[in-house]
Image (tube, rainbow, N blue to C red):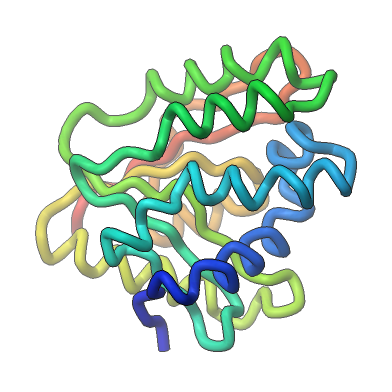
Length: 190
């Protein structure tokens, strides 16, 4: 059963997301060195989606098998903290391309009120057990009930079919320089 994560769950949720994104193409392009990834991805998670804990929109699967950090309409990630982390930690291979890529991502972000899913992931040892689908359904049922759009950027092409099964549509394929493709996706309420 999916539940709302509390502030006391934050460390365990971040750890689950660190495991989940350990092979993500875009994240590992940003931080390809394992030590660099382990040092920098946790603060990135907190900056990118950490406001979900205070807003009551962080969701966790049983035993921290996976988590989703949703930002409701009107709430934004901590842009300044994301910029600071990326500027000071990005790999040499990504440094010239990461900010133009983030800018392109911003251009596809809906201007209408919407729920934004900056991060969702499942521990690789717990994947293919329905945790990702359960996390999606938990929040999307509220989007449907309230007639709200939902938006995400898939940083792994393998996940696009999962999101499509939940009603998301690919808006574009973004790629800058050496970056892997990123897929902004929008879901209309059902």
